[in-house]
Image: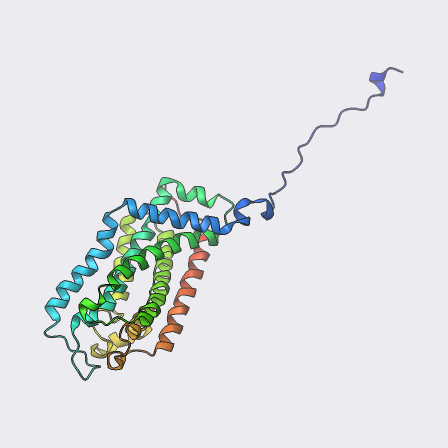
Length: 291
């Protein structure tokens, strides 16, 4: 019998299914903080190269401080205080809050720009977990915000606020918490936006009213009933109150009409956790991209 007749018919060759790469084999999963550090560093590099952001984040709050402080210092009265309080002294913590907020807005705009440039898509298709992307962007923006706020904080003695090393360190902690919360909120909004113009419009009707009704420009004690109610549920009211408690250390009368430090700390911490969790949640969903 011929060998050709005894040979079994050849079977069609089928490709074996590709095995998914295990999480242990992915370098980004083994070093997740490398992703966080890389994105954080990128925010700093971008900030250094864009000088106009420094003017936008620092210039506008300082202009507010000089103009409003000079214009209202003679007529300002805090209903919650028995004695007099200079408006420069009252408004200064609000300036710190403004700097943090404006920097958070500018830093989260980069999410929209990264999407248009294709950088965001390349990051999303990488094996890096969503939480590393969120932390990298948020920590980078928060670090920039706190750095600029600290520069202005060093000017506090010029506006009648005494220097107390321990109180300033405590105030720094709350500035970090506020920066994390506001940058996370900006991340949530920017993640679903397609244009910078739309983002600015939404910020104008969302974040800026939160700033106005936080007690930064005027005390809650002098507001009308409905405005007091809004200020009471505004989480920024408690972050700013915590800043005032620490910056006015040794001057109990200055913080007499504010929420207690314990309440302010609890509400601010809850605000951070809620916004950071929401930022991670929305990042896990596909981002909207328009061609």
